[in-house]
Image (cartoon, rainbow, N blue to C red):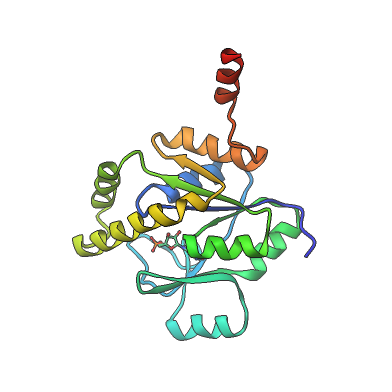
Length: 200
Ligand code: 5GP
């Protein structure tokens, strides 16, 4: 594959605000966002082909068989997958591509694209995460508990395997940090640099 663009994979706790941060990142900078396919039902306000490509289980499984996915995974009882052609084409055109996917898929991506950047978004605290999830009001308490449990598992076992961790305390600051990491491929921000200089 001839590839000129950077592939950035963003994962994080459910409810951490990945969607909002990524949306703002795209409004501000010219990244190409991959739209995933999923078998889960659309939430209120979600549009087919914009939020996700909403597929039946059968249609999704057919695409797995046809090797149409760059990566796919099962998450809380549903399939999620990244359409292969969009990612390949955008990277070949020199675009920097964003995938907002969970950890299993992220590690599959790393196997295929060695220099993909794996970035994990953390909430400032567990209490804040629960507050955001309940506030979103899109899921039952039961689903929230299930998601929080899954989130805690992911943090414990998987976040440490990522290349970069970012904390979503302030949305705009998080957008800038994300952009900086993707463009510079380093965890050292100007703020860190200045501190290092001052410490000399
Ligand atoms: P949600 O149902 O909240 O939209 O997404 C649930 C999880 O699936 C999130 O962690 C999200 O990042 C992940 N996800 C969304 N699209 C994909 C995909 O194409 N592949 C994989 N592996 N995970 C995805």
